Image (tube, chains in turn brown, green):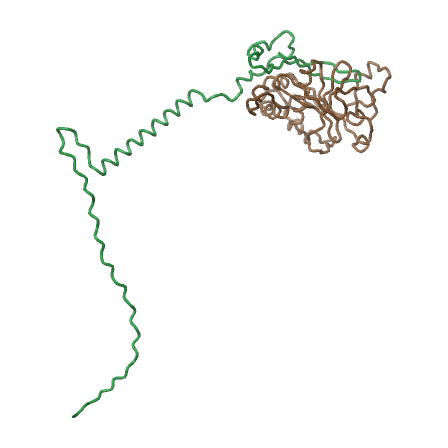
Length: 205
Length: 139
């Protein structure tokens, strides 16, 4: 898949608004955009952005932390340590590449093998970074052969934001709660919210 | 309140279409004031859920406390009735002062004498066949 623009070149408005996502779907109140790639080819690349963000290869993305280091970000009682945070124009990209047990996601059946907990953890990570840095943050997840961007709907954001204290009490954490704990606490509540399309319904449609 | 901005779209130049949400500060002293101001003008996300205090596991409800108290009382009453029944069974009915005869003294039940155990019968020994020879002694 070719990059939308080359490094250092001016990017037109049309090219800027058209990232070549291969598919997208609404899963439990989150709009998921997904990009498939060949891991054998992408993992052989040398640059961090080219390897971890193949859809954005060639762009001038600057990581906040030095290579190989992970920083902690905290917003209230939510503390996250994403794999990478990159400056991208007027905002940040919060990237994680854990979860899904290293499984391949087939383009035709990726929704059936979707992990909601991984998705919610990444959104919670992005919330912690956004609250810490006070900048708009996009939540990205890099799987074995996919790159995903999560666009949570307002009910999902509100659910995660309003249950941080309750999740901390539930897990008996004295000070902060992790994105994994918050996601685990909020997932059954999200499934009970009216109007959200469950993952199974989307997969079977 | 801590302002959180999540981008809905990523393009080559940056991010756009920002969604806003507010997070409670970590200090619980500030959280009470912050929860009330969820619908601040800057918050584009309407509160769709109840506050976290409503969904948090809380202390037992008053109804549960009353049920526990009632259960304890019933248990104590059952124990008291059992003790009274056992006392009446062992010592007889209670005697009221002036109206009933004196309370019977407790006398232990006579222990039955142990019966002599019958000796187990020994199996008869097999007797050897002895041939009786009648002899006659004559002087």
